[in-house]
Image 1 (tube, rainbow, N blue to C red):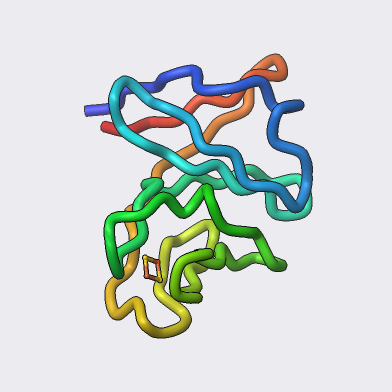
Image 2 (image 1 turned 45 degrees about the horizontal axis):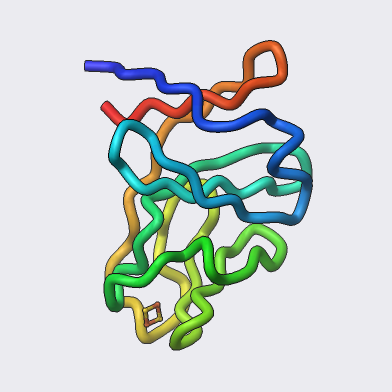
Length: 103
Ligand code: FES
């Protein structure tokens, strides 16, 4: 079941930046990879810290706490200490607003 929720204005998440948002109670981190906005659950798979506290380096989200890395658009884990991916969500930008489908 889809459940599209407006979470931000696209201008609030410029290229190269992360933005933590709430999608109907689901913590989500938006990542703007060269103009394409992707969305992951805003919780590291290593420990339960917010990925939005970290940084976006290229197409990877870097957790500020212990250095795990995740592919920003798929959530695939790319560096230890994370051994599991994080969930990714579909994103649409409509009329300058960002919508995420948290299902
Ligand atoms: S909480 Fe993210 S790397 Fe440990």
